[in-house]
Length: 327
Image 1 (tube, rainbow, N blue to C red):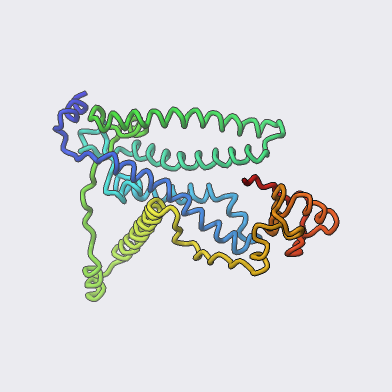
Image 2 (cartoon, rainbow, N blue to C red):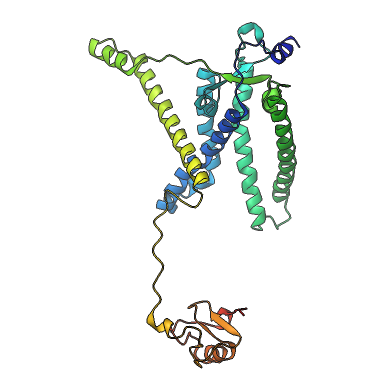
């Protein structure tokens, strides 16, 4: 109660992140998994016989990668990867005697939730897609369990969404120091992390020149390269997301749209006329395969006899006829 009162009266000694920063780091966390799985999609596209199986295990591969990644950042920065990217860290509300440091139990609990949440969500999403595709029509116990999981997760997700909004409102109104229900469950909150001092590249090169470069320095250099690469990759992902939101009709990776084809002279002479009777179309009817418009009676007879578009000679059938409702 003392900690809670101190927080509400503004006497705490740690900074309170804005709601936008908290939402931004959550958004970044949700973009890492799709980007990671694109790697397996790329390999499967290159050689489906050799790498196609990786798509079936992409959730497990990501869970393994995410586990190592989050464990590294929790151990070194007391934060998840996305929280570290935005300069945030987790502090304990219950361990006030140890400068709000996270306990081993809190770190373990954080790690488990950081791994399980995206893994379970991804699995349920796959179950739901399979259900839509009609793969669970057989009434066996495995399919029934998956359907129950889908229903339970929908209820959980709905409750979690409403509870999340409730905690956001409490957080921005300064009535709570827990921005999310999961952090409340673990007795943790978020604050700004202090800058971590690293050995500069010039100092490492100087050590190499003087012969004092150790294996520890080498490991430190590799670690820094790995973390910087991940952070640059995360920045690139955020930039792509921002670009797609600001320029939703422009895709950076898309090929340029070719110009529209010119209208051939053959089509110009049929403008406003049925190409068969050369009169204004009665009950205008287009052929989907070619786009030319005819009288319904004219084209119906031609299609039944010849089975093709009279102008382009493209194969066509009665199902390709589209009635046009024009004035």
